[in-house]
Image 1 (cartoon, one colour):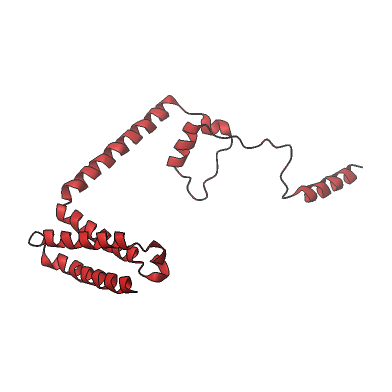
Image 2 (cartoon, rainbow, N blue to C red):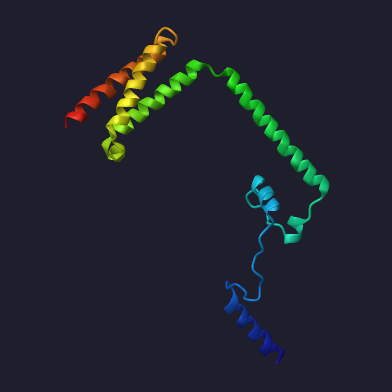
Length: 169
């Protein structure tokens, strides 16, 4: 009879293999504080999950203080890096970036290329982008090298030509 039971048990195991057990408790959510800490340190590939919720929740005040200190240091480090990079940035860099953005927006508001940007066509906005780009180029002459401004002059001429051609149609 023991043989019959073990055979039945094996059959039962085969039937339930791969199926979730109904008597298992649903996974509980981690407290918000622990979820945030877990999000900061993603598990390495192949790293096993904690054996139980207690392992994840069991924290020592020293560890929590160290984690808070690391977060504070990383915020300070980030702030320091931003300040250092701002010291290196020139107004000319910002002007060139804005001119690049205006040129891109000008093409987009002209609906060019049509296969992608036709839905954004807005002649008033395109005109504003083109006129502002032209004014910025004029204001930058003599203050930013001609080598850096020349591509924008070509872009401006192209935008103006496209504006006139598209507006006629």
